[in-house]
Amino acid sequence: MEIELLHQPDSAIAKVHLAPGEELIAQAGAMVAMSSHITPSTSLHRGKGGSLMGAVGRMLAGQSLFLSVFRTATPAEIFLAPKLMGDLLVCELADSNLVVQSGSYLASASTVNLDLGFQGLKSVFSGEGLFWLDLSGMGPVLLTSFGGIYTIPVHGEYIVDTGHIVAFDKSLNFSIDKAGDSWLGSFLGGEGLVCRFQGQGNVYCQTHNNYALRRQVGSKLSTR
Image 1 (cartoon, one colour):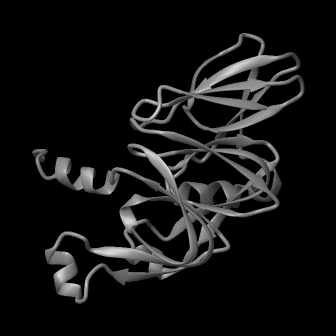
Image 2 (image 1 turned 180 degrees about the vertical axis):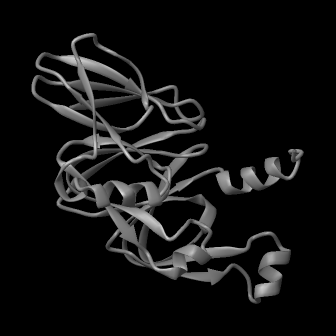
């Protein structure tokens, strides 16, 4: 499976080249165009996340209940794009785990398992929700972001604003903390809460904050 990223960073789209017998799992509605001989279907997925409870867990994490499955018996290609304008990043899993924020998972090889990741009450206070996705196995994973996406290697400790986190290696520990010296100063300064990562691994960040956009746009919409 080869993945080619086009029109980065603000309007990224992925062109996935599938070899005979390969299978691609994608978020529902991600397909833009594909070869006519690709066979699409809908599934709760297999592997660790294949049960009904696994599908419900993905829904709690902000993903759709069902996933799209694309199979081909001959060489084929398929285009995938996220719902929001932004960037795409390919992460290669090799018997490693990746914790993915709600809405940032786009697609992966069928050899990657999707599970419900419980990050505890600290995740609620971060503004990202109680459940995240826990990806494991081997193969490529397509992540999507709001705006550009970039990687921060962590060696020891690093601080990231909660609204800019796309995903992070599960080898990292994190805690929720204030951005400044005091809680009042953090909120009055507009920084709010941050994630304090510790350990060795990568954090994948986005340049824009979709939660901040919702608050700004939502405040200007009239209610009926």
